[in-house]
Length: 415
Ligand code: SF4
Image 1 (cartoon, rainbow, N blue to C red):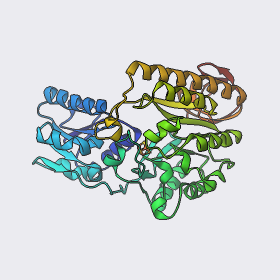
Image 2 (cartoon, protein in one colour; image 1 turned 135 degrees about the vertical axis):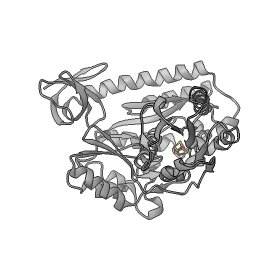
Image 3 (cartoon, rainbow, N blue to C red; image 1 turned 120 degrees about the horizontal axis):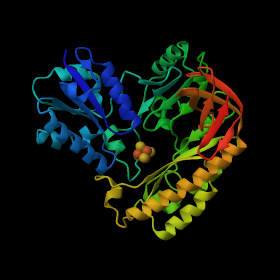
């Protein structure tokens, strides 16, 4: 049987897509050893120009190292760079997102192929990824209808479309019956779930919570405008993880406008305050160094930023992506300035997180996911990492921790 190796670049969605492809292999053997493989599927990322170069460099390197190995390009890069890599004969075949469930047939092809497919397809496999034996990621939707100026995703992953409720629920039922207690809902733009099916993320959450065995539900990421009254009604439910990740991307209205974002500070700040008042830990994505982020804009942004009751952050320094409106904008920001701004906001959040952990150091519900030698790691309901020392084997267990020691680099407890 021929062996197939998958090289995955990019985000969690791509990792899911690799799992779909692996689950569809019938006549081939999966290997995690690149050197042993007869075929390499490159599940590529195209989010920045840098990501494109990494994929191209990898393809060039394996071409030199294993000249007899067939290389197939899949993933987002197949939609942006597939044509050129195919034309230059750097890859044997190209398969677009909609073709990944046909991977077994495509790998049989003896002639070079270019199957780019379409961007409206939704996979019939709801992907599950498991952390240990108790936490499962469930992809509930694909694509995005937003058009943020810096983002290439809509043109390589298509508009938002959702998996069917029945498929999602039956998947969760099976997993919950097998001992999974925590579910993390993911997708490209999770909060747009159900928009085209006359339902919503809030309705889906309610139904998931009724599945026997479901103990905690997390949502990968939401957009501020997706937190409507229907969603807010769920905030006091015991199964809601007390942490929400809400993508702000910036805290200056001028920048949000340039970025073609749908949120504005005047609505975001009261929303965050409302959620924080309900006891939620709040995380966000934030881009620094996007074109247009002048000294004056940054000063105002930073002032606003300090007012947000945030506890977690994924900060990114802007990186140019060709074929996006941002790539054509003037006023590029120097890399060292972006880095400095990145460090500034990261530091602010580290302090806020410490403060939050100090005032939320009791009654923590923790799912221990990893560890050995008597020290286990997991996350509490606020998505703060905790390290637990115990003589008992606690791996994959839920533990209630009455009091933790709050240290700068994380929470610690002895059980
Ligand atoms: S919300 Fe904006 S940044 Fe996120 S995937 Fe959609 S277009 Fe890209």
